[in-house]
Image (cartoon, rainbow, N blue to C red; front, top):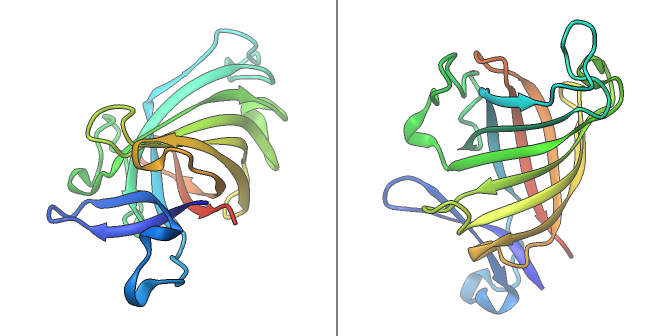
Length: 192
């Protein structure tokens, strides 16, 4: 069984994560449970693009509208004081960026006007690699418009060190950054 685990902090300070089988555990760590991997995501609204239709009269995306967006992945605790993305789309903590988050999906509920509950159904790609696509975790599920409420999503796979990844992504919408994008806390729990 593959497990998502938090690995070590590298020499340059970047967090590396990987999928390890039970045989990779040894010594004093044998049998010990790793805590879930937790990261923070900050959306760059300059990269948010939605379809021309369907939209409400004010131009906001309505039910069924498709979109794509991107943002930055940070270590847990980086966004405790806010920030994440500057209004120009650059990261507020460039030395802390772990990778790129890409999200595509469809508005559901009452589209962009949803005040509570599921507002989008999405696929998310967490890209941690030095080269695009060489070390990813991929998840699918709904996202909530409610602040501070957890929602579980399926970890459906990955590439590189995360090939064969399976488990649960728990996501919390923490608020919005200076670029008006979402700030999320995301944890990955391996399948049992």
